[in-house]
Length: 350
Image 1 (tube, rainbow, N blue to C red):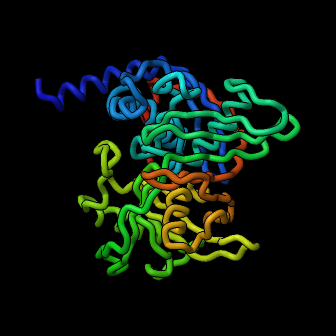
Image 2 (cartoon, rainbow, N blue to C red):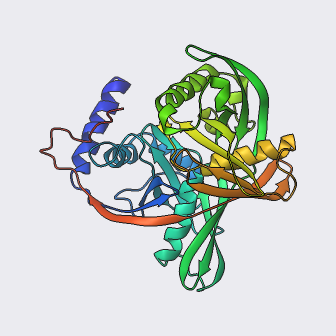
């Protein structure tokens, strides 16, 4: 039987199975960006590590469940979430597979912040009423930490300590259809990002420019496809430009302040300042000397939500960035698939 027919029959079987699922989620938002947590899966995802499981999840029931939870009418084009999976070893509290409307990502800072809050608020990780508690999480790009700050028994903030971030390439020229020739930097923050000033494309980081920002982000990402800078130096499964970060100066207090929007996957818009993208921007600003040693970056999003970030440590492969933000519970949900529903797994309008 041809591989295409085998895959089609497997998909049909998974859809039959999906009609029996009752999938409970805990929904958070981090600085305005959604994060839908699935604490228990109705199936196992094979793999010795979280990175292995990400590869396995791209086909089979995990991908069916991703579509069920991210597509309309249960989700939307900018939905984001994560499946809780076993960690790589006993050194972490949990593992996670991050997902969006187009697939499974290698990193997610806003999701890690939400997971830190969820792990403590759900009782998965015990925390004192006051002080910091580390929630250690294995993600596809490596091991990260969500440092949860408690005040009087409540989560006050979470600091995402990322894998080492670094500048991969400077001033790469991309020739876009609608925005002309642009120069971008390629940065690593657990995923590969193209980064440039919004004004270079004739844009501003405002909702009024949103459609143009989406289109510019898509065109830049497409132009970089196959570029050597879009390759991870040691792990091919981490290859590929994940998103485009448009940034501009922002008013602030005594700290360096910038506003940004990250257009990731296929035109998806981060409502938060983007956790892994913020780590990548700190690596860039540290490398250029714009962010002084020991200084803090105030990073604002397109909806003016806020992260603060700093270089927490230096390693040979890059800087470990701490990104501080807040996450809040918004819903407990139970999702099902009615086998009589003609829309099935749903749709994405944009």
